[in-house]
Amino acid sequence: MAQETMLSSVDWLMPRTFINQILCFPRGDHKVFELLKSSLRRLTVDVPYLLSGVVGQEHPRGSVRLTEPYQTLDELMTLYDSSHVLDYATLRANNFPPTALTNASIQPPDTTAPFLNPVPVFRAKLSLVKGGAILYVAIHHSTTDITGLGALLKLWSSHCWPSPATDLGFNRSWCDRGPLLEISASWAGKTFDSNPELVHIIERSARSKATGTPPRDVAYETAIFYFPRQTLQRLKVAVTEHLACLDNGVRWVSKGDIIAALLWSATVWAEQTGDPETAPDAAITCTAGIPVNFRPRLNEPLPKHYLGAAFAMTKACVAQRDLCFLSEKKPAEDVPLDSEFISTLARVSSAIRASLIVVDQPRIEDALGFVSSKSDITSVKLGPRHGGISLVSWADEGVYELDWGETIGMCDAVRLPKMRGKRYPIILPRLPKKNGHGEGLEVIVSFDRKTMARFRESQVIRLFGTLTC
Image (cartoon, rainbow, N blue to C red; front, top):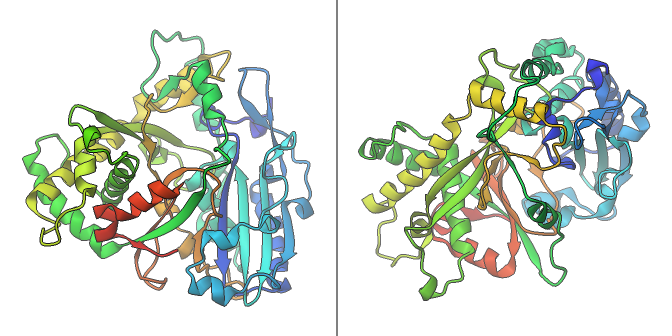
């Protein structure tokens, strides 16, 4: 098999669906579409497999590969005029609510189940709205992760300028899966007495449960919350000063660890029944699955803008009582940043930081080698086994930093459409100072109405976040 069509064992473990993002631009006309399409043509020269599809392969069972390029540019990029339905000024005034972005007409074709065979790698659709445009991008998850999508968008936007993409330092190493394939090949023939730390095997019953659909009689709400950078920085400083008292080996936490801790707390508290007889228990441990970009963690790091999938999943564990304490309602006269609150937040955020540290070269090699050694990987899943929530961050994707040229400009918002089922918090790309409320982070979440109401009522959301749409 030609290496150009081979996917790595990390790619094999990605969800068999699309990563979707909606980019909102304040300019929109046919010139914008023509420029995006012509720059996409140049992008496919850099990344030819965007014209390919994803298909299953016989060995190992459950794995996938790329086809040879077979699609046309007209299939990859389409245009829709929704100016009679959507008004950009209204969208912006309402902070680009996901509920306004649910029209199936703005979604690229062939990106929802049942999928084609082969499944196209890439689709994009530009919808012209009154006073602006919406670019809906979809890329198959078996070919990349959110960091890779960010790099792809960076490369695409660069082609909207007269200067070549080499100004970004682009070279073929961005597309080269060779280093990961070599790691897998070096473990050929090895037997494993137990599962590596960064993967697990799921049972058949759990597999069938995971493919279930949301109940039709449950109404779900999608909401976006905003957390100012200054607030997260203040919490980070207070927690870092307290870490010396914990003696758990963690000396610092990031603003990302802080917001993940707040969201974890609000989610666990919101999903409690509220029955006093089922009060949070210190003996009960809650878990959270957290993705970790391992591009810089290999002994020979992958390129920062490597376009394939390169993340592992890790697991953080904390006491249920600590999580719920942070979100419990307190009397109005209480000071929210008292020592007990900071001490508890330090335990939760440092547990998150400690879980990220374990993703290193030996553990990554173990996971890649284990997957490659199997004849059937349908039961192999990324990350340690756990039954808790997921904490996903797109904060470092850098979409708001991209300048798409004089004709298109810079995007005002990055969104997902309203979700049909439950979705634990996703931290959206970091907001710059010029945007909306100023520098900070947005979070999108989807719960049933009762859970969403409790999520909004949690202390950490009321004190540190703002519902924006």
